Image 1 (tube, helix red, strand yellow):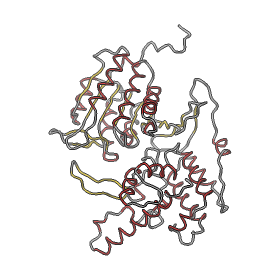
Image 2 (tube, rainbow, N blue to C red; image 1 turned 90 degrees about the vertical axis):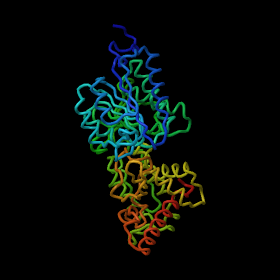
Image 3 (cartoon, rainbow, N blue to C red; image 1 turned 120 degrees about the horizontal axis):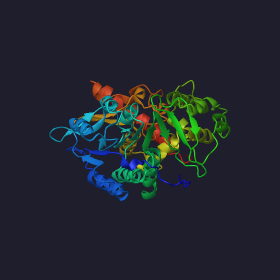
Image 4 (cartoon, helix red, strand yellow; image 1 turned 135 degrees about the vertical axis):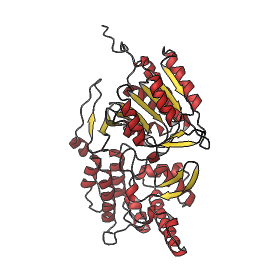
Length: 439
């Protein structure tokens, strides 16, 4: 046996059967799915892949999916198309329009083929929910935790299959796919969008990689995340960082003598909902508004700088760059939000991006926009980027009232006017924070 550490395994992943599936129903945004398939096949064949192990099917219906699984016995299944978050993946019906398939149905299907399928890639927006369900039965599953543009999706697929075709394992191939986005799309944060479940554990990439370490943070996929440990890659060896060591580096400074220890501990443990509620509590303390039980515009505009940075840095650190006020501000600026300007259209774009405003639809019929209730927030790392903190931003101060109500439930003009007044208050609170220059 050769001592060369770069030698490829004798039974490389390039010999595995791959099934490429695509769906782009009538009336949905057109995607460059043929280009994605072409580039995947090109990379695999450059690596010595033959024609036989690569099978593909377009305009896939749910029954087509079942049939393809039976016909081709794939070890790797790749889906390209649209995702609809909680509602499911978007397949096609018999006449080419959209047909949603939910997470439970997909998980049940892959459970039936669990003895043969080794990896599933869902290259579709907001498909992390389906990926999490499938990961109960398949060792390696990749899904997109947020919206992903065509260019980024194609780059990820090319990087992933380039590595796979050259005999690398699924974990390495996933990392190369993320890196391909970062290499080719300068300034884009979409390299954070693909997330990987490995043998039932969610693998979370640090937002700012440590140049001296390849560490990843693993959390339980079915209860995301209850505990956090940092495990080093086997080669080269790096020290395991204990939670107590992490805590020693945290700056818990406060101008108002607020104790941020509880917030830090909740975030470090991945208790996102409790941490969100604690964030609201310490913000009330820092502004001396515990009696009022609410943050008004003036208190937000005059919120102590040191405390704001402490809260933000804790959220950013322990969510690996997914959550925090500064993350929300960057998203707000990305949708054209500007200092000194308050704009309802901009705020709606921002709210859609962070998952506070959703579109309720059935098939191709657009029903209406819905501001989610606080109880409908996603308290895990598969939530849209910037989704948290959210509790403090409620127009009622506590996150549970009219922020998520649908105005159609109000039967008279006065109630509708009250609804929009409350929404306007919530918008102004959020924008008052995002307009601050010290984030």
